[in-house]
Amino acid sequence: MKLTSLRALVAAIEEGSLRSAARRLGVSQPALTKLIRELERELSTTLLLRSTTGVLATAQGMVLYERAIAADRELAQAVEQIQQLGGRMTGSLTIGAVPLAVMLLVPETLRTFGGEFPEIQLRIIEELYIAQLTRLRKGEVDIALGPLPEQLPPGEFAVETLMPIAMVIVVRKGNPLGQARRLADLANARWVYTGATPDSGYAKTLYERHGMKPPPAGALVNSTLGLLSIISSGNCVGLLPYQIAVHPFATRHLDIVPVAEGPLKLTLGALARSDAALKPAVRHFMAHLHRAAHHLSSLPPAVINA
Image 1: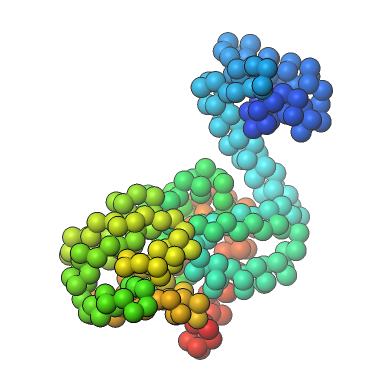
Image 2: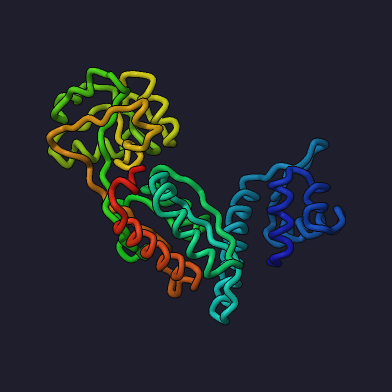
C-alpha cells in the first residue's frame, strides 16, 4: 500500500471531487484516479462512490481514510522528532488549552519559547473541558493544558503539574441566588454544566466531593463565552476559574457566591502522550510552561487578577 495512494484517497474524500483533489496534490486527474483504483484492487473493495456531482467515501473508504490521516500525522511527527534530535529545532506544536491557561500561562510561555525556538510554529486551540482527551489520543494536539482529570489511565500520558486553581460559583449580578451561603441552598437552582454530557462537569464534581447529589443540568455548554452569556442573562448558576470571575469584564455582569464549602480546587497541568521518546520540542515547551507558572506565582495577586 503506497503512501501516495493513501494521500490521493484522503484528498479525494476531503475535496469531494477528483478534479479538486488532483489540483490539490499537483497531479493529473487520470493519475489520481489510477492511484485510488490501485487501492481498491489491492483491498478488493470500493472506497469511493462516484457520481456526476463528485465523490463520496464508502464505509470501507472512511475506515481507510481515518487510518491514513493518523498514519500521515504519525509520519510527520516522526520526521520532526528525527530533525529535532539532530539539532534542527523546526516543525510545529499544537496546544489544546482551557481559557484560564490561555489567559494566564500561554502568553508568557509563547514569549519565552518563541524567543528560544523561533522556527517552531505554534498553534493554540482553546478547549473548555480538558477531560475530553480524544484529540490528544488521536495525536491532533501535542499537549493538552488544563485542569488535570481525577482518573487517568496509568502510563498513558506524561503528566506535568503546573499550579493550583479554584473554581468559584457565579450568578448574574443582582441574582437573589447570590445570597446563598451553602451548596444545599443551590441544589434546586438551574446549573450550567460544562462538558460533553450532563453526566460530567465541574458542578457535578463539586457536589460529589461534599457527599451531595449533583443537581440536574439546566443547560450544557462547551465554551466560556456560552457559559458567561447564559449566566449573565438569566437565573442560572455556574462555575468559573477565580481569575476569570474577578476579571473586570466578568465583574460587570457576575457575582461570586461565597458558599461555606469554598471553591472547587483543581490542579492546572499539562498532558502529553507518553511515547517512548517525546519529541524535544514538547519537552522544551513543558519546561517553558513551568517557568511561566513559576513567574505567575511570584506576581502579586492584584497583578494576576487585573
